[in-house]
Length: 79
Image (cartoon, rainbow, N blue to C red):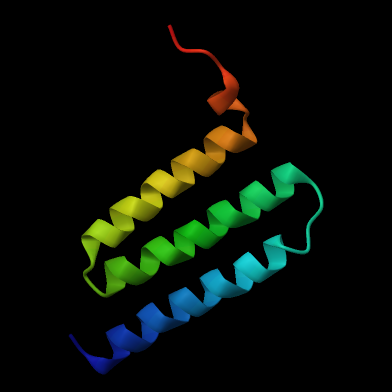
């Protein structure tokens, strides 16, 4: 793994942290969740660049969870 990959991975993490900070300034639940989805995309891109695929899979699940919360799917009863 080269130095440039490490830098790109860290820049992805920095973008994720910045978007997390932006989401904390929002008042509407849907805006918070959508910005956090963007944040999870950045958090997922970092491990892919750094070849940490289990971390990327975990972030993919977090994106699905946030999208479900945005659409209020987690409140439906499953029979």
